[in-house]
Length: 183
Image (spheres, rainbow, N blue to C red):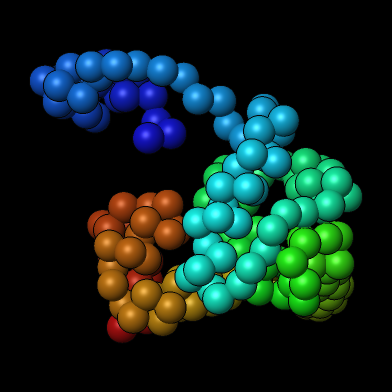
């Protein structure tokens, strides 16, 4: 796990007896972003593991490919790396992974930046309208109501999931649902 179980035991959020049962051998594995020198070896393992699954015969990778992977922060650690490598394997047209097989990373970055810029611009215009009309409180309530409604719809009105996504407890969520007349 990526959680500190000892601290969770101290806080009473993890059973002490289970902690000692699981903690036979303890070792620290730093996040991928702190051990980028491991990336080539991990990529090799990912290729070997997935070649047959996706019907490919990738034999290796270029230095530029690995250097590009080393530039990333890898917040999702090995799982994120595996997803990126497998996706690049799918795009690969020969037997060596190269920089061009990672083009989708740049496209995703540009798309996110464009969406963020577009969102910021539209949000500023909406805020200016509310400010000019002198009813910023209505704006805050409308934003909160829209967020709640969207999360509820996306979770198919599963209150536990919605509350978890919103970072509030179910009781607070029920009050807000009633306040905004959402059900």
